[in-house]
Length: 204
Image (tube, rainbow, N blue to C red; front, side, top):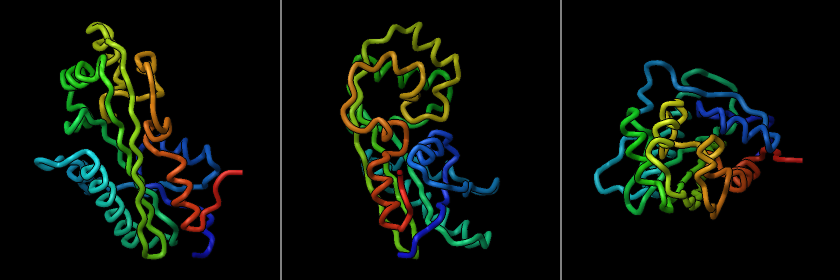
């Protein structure tokens, strides 16, 4: 593929923007219009396993972004999409619906090891590639009042598993196995490999 001078990032996540900047990738946002129902893409299907779920959602988001680029008649460039979920066994713990749901999720995670599964997909020159990263995070036991204070801060909302690893919740993390950036929402090792495949310069 010919070299690309920038990529589109089809994500509202400021963390994913930060991570692309960290590896020196110039990017522009390719966000959904107000009439696009992006949230519906994240609905969990009955019996769906976490890995299958996050891969399906990421592919659906990428497909929508490719159509968005064509509709808006923007300059061609690779498109990056990603999705993250938190899982306890077969149980998918997505973004909390409200404060009570956030407390429920964090109570489930307290004192246990959970998986953070992030898929990243890239479309370039009519071709698509996808990679999945799975990491494990061990939370210490957490007192109910600490959970409630964290939820009251507003940090859990919009986050899979009701927490952000780079927030105050890091104080609960006893152990991580895997990719810190994957837990943040964009595994940089896998992302860099996809970008290099698409002809995007990465890093120094």
